[in-house]
Amino acid sequence: MMGRSIILPGSAVAPYARHFYILLGATLIIFVGMLLLVSSFFLLLGFSIAWYHIPLAAVPTMLFVWWGAGQFFPQTQRRMFLITSAWAASAFIVLTLLNGLVYDTSWDGQNYHFEAILQMINGWNPFYGNPTNAVYFQHLEHFTKGPWLNAVAIYKLTGQIEQAKAFHMLLMLAAYLLCAAAFSTFRTLNHRRVVLLSLLVVFNPVSIYQLFTFYVDGLMSSILVIVVSLFILMYRQPSRVLMVTLASAIVIMVNIKLTGAIYAAILGAIYSLWFIWHKKQYRVGFVACLFAGYSAGVLLVGYNPYITQYIGQFLSKGDPFYPSNLKTFIPLEDNIPSNFSTMSWGEKLLTSLFSKSQATTKPSQYKLPFTVSLDEILTFYAPDARVAGFGPLFSAALLTIVLLIIALARYRRRLRFASVLLLLMGGILVSGLSNPEAWWARFVPQLWMLPLFTILLIMVATPRGKLYRLSRIILIILCINQVLIASPYLISAVARSILETQQMIHLKNSGERISITFNHFVSIESRFKEWGIEYQSVDELPCAVSQQQSIVGTEARICSPSG
Image (cartoon, rainbow, N blue to C red; front, side):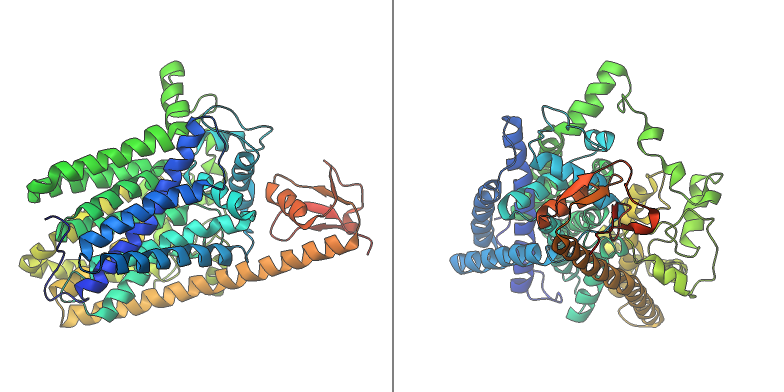
């Protein structure tokens, strides 16, 4: 029976371990998807998001675990049900607590993401009403709301808004488990190669420098890895567990960002045509799961904005962005390097790939591959690298990969056995290039997978020889690249969080009523309330500039307390 035996003789990891990885990763995906569905159902009924949505979402998740354990481990179903449930619950608790220790000090995270979460905490139902006195009204109305819905559910349960960032790491964990399971089905990969390649795929630079923030591009990166990994696993051995997990992943994907719906459609269409041709006996179930995931994601969870805004406004006004327009809604001209304004789509992409990493709007600067400068490394202290956002050594890896791809043409016969990888690489490339701003790494995080999947192809087709040795060198380059990105970001994120905590303690201990101008940083108002700091919001501070100070990581300014 489909799903009862997923054994691939000779593969790198024992089927028992692979099945556990699949079941645990799938459990996390099902839980996140069910939480979106539960919260959306209650919003549809006119209720607000509440703490009990999390245990309600856990109930069908547990039923899935029981069923999945029976599919993969029929002889030890009860034992594996308990083990998987315990691991999933522990991961959720640990990651939630961990994220509560570090403040989000990012720009967008403290602005419209924070405001959206606070609006929903205070009762805004996006299905039936508009946010009240919102600073970022257009963002809240036009953007998908999946990450915000889940963040509110955690806050309602724990009372700590910073803990709501946990879903970023939770999806990264699920992505690693499913990616490792997928890669382990290739018999030429040993355990160490599977682990290293999976870690590099999951720890996308975008995911790294958005780790402790409410930015959603890292979430998009992880869900793309999850969907691609599920596609590989379903080709190697289809099962109902994988198909149900895919449906949940699609629900999540189309509600992380607007581009998620486009990426899901492109990847789903390309893979579906190929899968239906090669796996005819499973085509009905596969198409049904894709359709169910997309429909539930758009019509229920994504009712706002897909139905209320885009379809509704298009039908009534002929413009899906009404009453705004695309250029004023997303003012990219104010956020791109000044020399990009006259470049074509392709010029911007190539310039970004082969320039120095930067997070400013200054003109970009070309550089020699394999070179790194200190100012490039310091770019990654913040979560929004723009030019060369995949890291200072990505151009070096990319050039080498292009040469290896040319050399791989000699192994056409062997590559036919890895046709699923070639297909998915094509889908990843098409989905990434479909974005008119593909030069900005956080808008197209899937492009990071291409060099790593090329290395995977080499290891599958030529497990020995010169190409294999060169691929190991590229892996070393990419590992160094990740260290250069992670080090400044993690140091900066933790340091700024500590400094802001100390600042809050000082303001609290002063006992004074603090005059503050928030300058759209709504997160600070929430933190003042959390710390019990009395404040007065003003448009202009009633003190001299010399007596003013900024709140760490923001443009919010206060009059320094006399103490």
